[in-house]
Length: 350
Image (cartoon, rainbow, N blue to C red; front, side, top):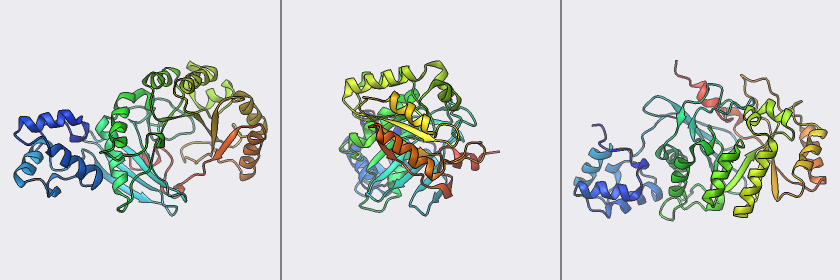
């Protein structure tokens, strides 16, 4: 039987309670359902055993038995502990999400915000098929819950990075609604400071985040220290330029006091030289920021190559000697198409 209402995960709690009242289901059932979903990793009404059978039947009639609107197409696992899922929505469009683990005990969900991407970054598989649509609040939240459910009890997600397919600042309202559930005390209770929103660097989008005074971290995909190189890597840069991106990041820091991370994917022969490192150090001089250096994860359809280990070491050393705080984020999941957009493209619908 088709659901009579919007998917459960798309509904604010008060709206859900109102639907319960309209259908003569006690309002306190809303809290019970939330505990099953967020604390017990249960996503089917008929498995919620502290709810009466008659109310479970009503809920299934209203929303369908499963609280998920997507279908799991495939799930892959890497030797390094990375897991990736591909979800298909009722309109047959697909997105991917990744669970990352590290030796510090962090369990991080990497989430998509759009089907496809309009930014057209030259190094990324996400935009090869163009932009399709925004994801809803519920579709974003479903990714988080599905990744959380991959973890054995009592483990839970500890961090979220909004670094999957899509430009988050172009779907900010839906994203923030989903994150509010993930960080709520009666949600997944993920700490606000453990959520990072990554943007390609749209000044207006960053300013919208600044105006919202978000409790989350901001990461800016910089990837170059001059406009000529950045235009080649990130076509969006032609509409604003690096200086405007940095100015918007400065405004974010001034408003929130939260240090900005600048992500820098090292691509062999494109932006990994000593001169590139010196330009980047000069660009970020005296900024309260950190640079995340990421050796490029090759995509078969693209021409770019990974840098040599020696080039990575030299680049990092040059930044460090210039007083820039640097972290190196090594690739994970190479054996399972873990780069953004790769899994989706390998399971394309003909």
